[in-house]
Length: 384
Image (cartoon, rainbow, N blue to C red; front, side, top):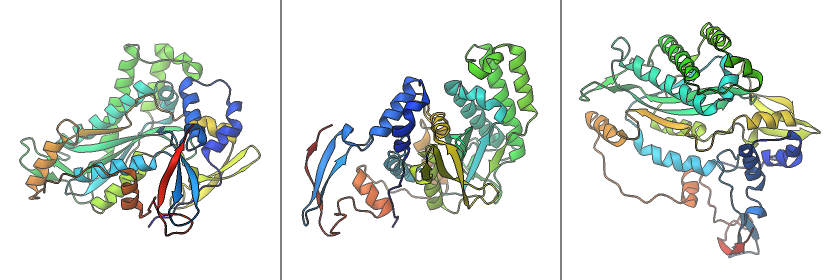
């Protein structure tokens, strides 16, 4: 059973105390701040709950449901995992990460819609094209991509995590082509193809007038300057990283849960606030399994947090190839049939949030936290 505790300080507290010092902000940022600071407070209303065994009672307030809110992602994550479990293929899985050189970050940051789309397209097409090459795998593959835009210190660092089955279907979709043991595709070839596709797409976007140039990158509106930054980026190392394969479907699901609905930083990484300084945990690069403490001026911290607000309606979890939404069910059926797996048709209703919480954490939201015996029931409405 997982244990949970309430952090001593939260992102909402920082916005409450220092949000007014951030200056003029776009409406999208103002809305995120408003949602985060009112989440699970009396401003959103809710209902009262009481225990049927003891005198315990409290108000339970509504969530803001904003995808950038640190408090509102856990249940969304559980629902997504529950739906994806049935899509797992009976094979090994790999984790592949595509990252661009830092020289391109300011351009992508000021052109999020176009820039993130180009990143998704260049990375996904690189995976598909290299996999179809007979010298690599020679098969059609499928995969899930998740966009992340941050580094541990919250600076802008756009990259995409892909979860990829270790193999694919042949052209006639009559056989499953296995990759080599513990080896998927050449990361050297992937990085070369990715670099070419990304730079070509950015130059095409410039020619089509789809890019905006403002602030520190205003000089890039002149093609010679824009071309120069592409040439500089082309000379850098383009990192495509393939991690060790997962050990079975359960590990894939657990890992997906960590990445799909993650936001820039959770409340649990905040350590303490001293004056105008926020202390928070980051991964130690020299010892990845260890944590170290980073200290920032809280206004710098909050501005970095706001860098990662996505455009309205932007889809940051996408399915490609065999796992593309349109033909996903049919392709999964074909793969399982080839593997000799007989599927049992099951019709189950989607689990509500209480059932999901019980299933994945072992926690019972209806159990009285005071007497540990009674059951909580709704006692009335708490209006906003």
